Length: 333
Image (cartoon, rainbow, N blue to C red):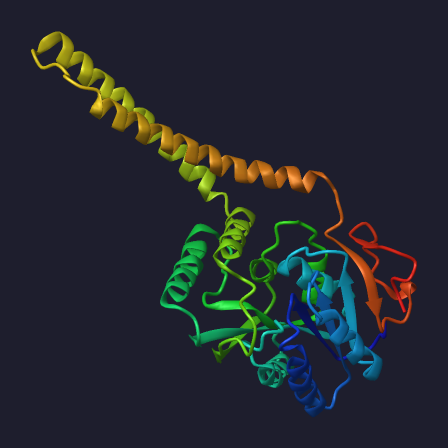
């Protein structure tokens, strides 16, 4: 891997054949205008279309383009991590391939970095092409997360950002599996600022973050940066136990000291269902934390690389050998 590069751009990809060439051209235009050395590290997260083939062709004609090919789909946050692992720049930019985050903003981020900031993140002041439901749930999630954790995670931001090398190295030293990159950056600290921008709708293709994946990312964020769900579960369990204990005395009092009797089981069944539902929900919260502890305890690598193109040699690879596994003899060429 070439050393001394000024800027590395990390681009995770999953089924982006319709947009990847346009993404490359826009990135190339912006990076050439900076007058600095750079590399574009594309990470193919198990795409099932022609995404990898298109990037291979770009690698053949442009040595600044590099490809990290996963053995299968490992997820967006893991793909971002792999790109940082394989980057060599003094500064590192994270940007998705769908062009919702404008590559042209990179120049402004570099300018703010030159002012002394270690992290420059893009802050969305408007989100085009997204439903009212998506905007509402996103706003609620960021504010809920901020209220539940002591880490100051900026609202209305994604992974689109520029980071100094020391920040990138700090992130790559964290090898937890349930990753929430923007939260990890905030946890790491350093001097941070924002650049406002309008987020465009997708240039082409379909969103790679449907509701199911958004929920999973939300759970990863909550469990990685807050233990308040466990505390809430404890408090709620105590309150429900207290209510049940008081209700027991009410029932005993009615039985022994009044002529009021319960003629049916409707209220009893309703209360039982309520209590059992809450109990199962609390067990689910506990299960989320226990399940993540179990996944961490396995000690498996975060991802497997089946091929890496335009990297000088395997000796130039990052030193985190336990987390990066090459598959096959022709992993590097």
